[in-house]
Length: 172
Length: 250
Image (tube, rainbow over all chains, first blue to last red; front, top):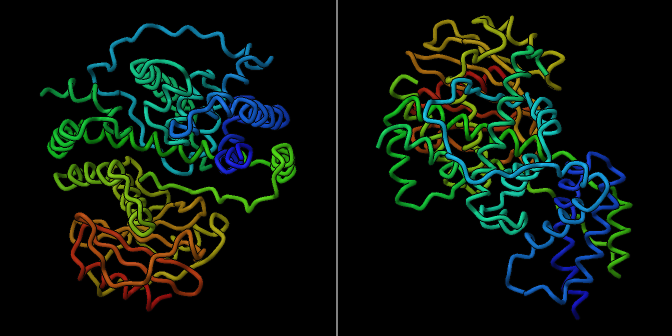
């Protein structure tokens, strides 16, 4: 039965989807609604899903698209995606920082402050541990753009972190 | 290939997206180039920091029930969040590249993941400008420093008459549980001692004599509801020696 198969596939993703939703919406209530709506839409569209293709990427894509059309999502989506740029500077990163574990809160703060397109790609890569291919499917962009956006996202996060570290680390 | 060219591939390398031959070539370069090795460690640390910081929000039971009901399903056992441990003299450069290599190699068995995480902590601490937060060779200074910072106490051994000296300590985390990271020195080499509360599954590795992993030697045991890990790039004899001192003091 299609519905039973959907549940088997979809429910194990529940925690991750919620975490991602909360990061996107920055609000628990909105995150809950977003997750609920995602499951509803996914169930409805499940007959169109090809078993054997990447279900997780498919679910995350639905969640993300649902977010983008929400009020909060529309506000956050103002973002210009440039063409693939040079992937790396040629100098070593002059502000390379060795992050200590205790800086979890600082990193969380920085993740909250960074632009949504950067935040989401960092989360998909590091928390969901998606491959570039999977990320490309979730965000509906070419792999080259995944790489350049990830590069820029990390750069943006690093500058935020450097700022915060310079502000003084008071033993979190 | 010049460093600039290697650095362009660094993101893809630590993301595990470089084709095998290129990854091997880059790994080779990291063994020889301190600057690139340090850069790659920074990349890995950023990844891990985001991985840890990003696992932040948990859904309520009510939401889960609501969603399950809307799918017409029965309540299910909650899936546990799998916490992945995504993991400078000439030796230090080698260690840096090994630490990155351990991470990129995606060690998957629980013991390897824990060891990989701690080896990485050990190396990163050594590579950092301020490896310890309390600097003292005196255990009577170091031990009380941890009070209020970690939820347990521990005993440190008297080192007079041994070849070991205490460098200092800092707070550390394993599976997001706080513990103590002490640094000892013996003949120009640093050994890290990690002490955490024994939390069964997350920190479980079977007690063993010194275990060798890459160039690290590691020993671990549980005593008084605390789990100890001793790790360093020294011989088994030194690890065993320090371990015995710690066990006798505990």
